[in-house]
Every structure is written in C-alpha cells, then in structure tokens.
Image (tube, rainbow, N blue to C red):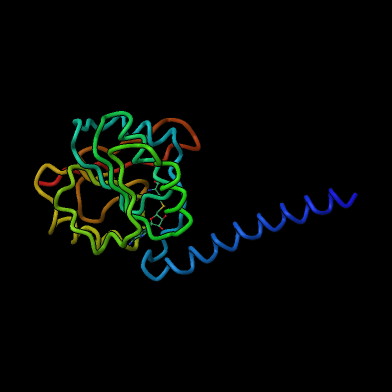
Length: 183
Ligand SMILES: C[S@@+](CC[C@H](N)C(=O)[O-])C[C@H]1O[C@@H](n2cnc3c(N)ncnc32)[C@H](O)[C@@H]1O
C-alpha cells in the first residue's frame, strides 16, 4: 500500500513540476511573444507544407518561434537544408534542444527573433499570433533578400499577396499556410 502511495505522490509531483514549468515558461516569455503560446503545428500539416515548398540542400530555413523544433527536423530530414529556430519559451526550447540532439544542420537558439538578423534566410516559417504580423511584415520587408519564401501558418500577413494558399482537405488539419515570395 505504502508503495502505491509513494508512486502516486512521485507521479503527482512530476506532473505538478511539468505544469509549473509550463506556466512559468509562458509567463516569462509572454511580454515578448505577445500572445503566441507554445502550440505545435500538427506533423501531418508540416509534411503537407514541406510538399508545397522545395528547398535546396544547404539553403537556410528559419522558424520564428520554433516550439519543439518539429518544423526544423522535418525540413532538415526532407531537404538537407540548414534549419535555425528561435524560441523563448523555456520548456519548448529545452524540448527542441533535446529532440535535436545529434542532428547536424539544426540550430535551436534561446533568443528573441525580433533581435535576430534574418537576412541570410532563404525560407522563413512562422506560426504566430495575428497581432504581431503587421510588425513582422515590416521587419521581413526590411531584412529579407528578394526570392526569400515566407510561410505563415494559419494567419495571412496583412497587405501581402500570397503566391499560394495551401491546405489539406482533412479536418482537423485544414488550416491554411500562406506562402509568399519576397520581391
Ligand atoms: C504557435 S507556436 C509555434 C511553434 C512551431 N513553430 C510550430 O509550428 O510547431 C509559436 C511559438 O513562438 C514562440 N515565440 C513567439 N514570439 C517569439 C519571439 N519573439 N522570440 C522567440 N520565440 C517566440 C512562442 O514561445 C511559441 O512557442
């Protein structure tokens, strides 16, 4: 009986610690992330996005708020591209670092992407809160070179005209990707 109680208390303690880490990670990151919570894009959708873009080996993809790094791993595996992710939610960052251990060509950075120079990117991926997209469009317009592809999951970038809107015909995965090319 005592064994069960101890097991229960240990499990409850671990669960509590994970929940607290999640809550604190969100709370500390929130002033910078401005509403973008750590919510992952489903893998099925990431594969569909990868079907829609062609990235040559060695080209650079940057995920602005990379969560657990799943976009980075998919793009690295599918295309041999260099994949860079910025993430400020500590739990997401640690998970991404853990899941990317031993994978060359992937760099996960605990940094605010607003302070990063994105001019080397060939493809930008983002899944962010719509409120930040107007400011993001200014930053991307200033820094990206012509031809760079920008992919925004779920939300259109205001005032930009997508080259393609891609979605899979499969609920609950049917939210769109807006795909743009810098001129
Ligand atoms: C909706 S999640 C998307 C995660 C991942 N890109 C995916 O599609 O699975 C957005 C992430 O962006 C991160 N984020 C938002 N603003 C950020 C910033 N300024 N710098 C770094 N990360 C940021 C949040 O912490 C959150 O984990």
